Image (cartoon, rainbow, N blue to C red):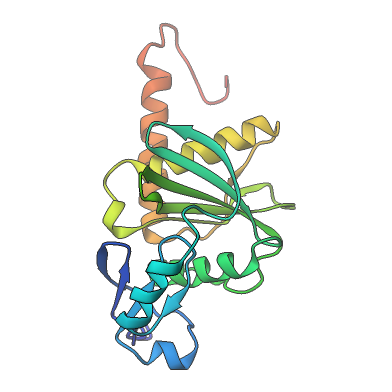
Length: 215
């Protein structure tokens, strides 16, 4: 088995968090040669110095993802972002995701995809929590191409929330969908957990015998 490539960017500052990276992302050499990368949690711009990041934070006019807000429940808000209309944002998002997903291969060809961005909302804006992407027209009926919850927001149920939302969209489109394979290690764990919970609720109040063939 080949050895995993060690990331040159070992840590990112994202909002109020410093987060250790897991995998190598193909940032331009002038950025990837720095062990610490600064990323704006609102517009996804990446920077190589704390000074530039500080100046950017004071001037950045963006306080939410550059798309349509399609869902809100309390402090949780989800935006639909078109990869064709917001190409730079989506490319930067994909680069960020690669640092935490081992099977991530999409970076620049974002135009055929829609991105569903989950945020936590407060008086400062809509803070990025995670996302999933899907093809606008999938020949295989995939309803998720890539899914990520940021490490600092894991174990809060947000992964299950995103998976459930992807199936609700599929249901609204009157289709039967499934996630694109192979799943990342964390994605596989999240989907297994999701379906265990879904099956539990389906069977909990079942009064009569039930079978897979019958369903």
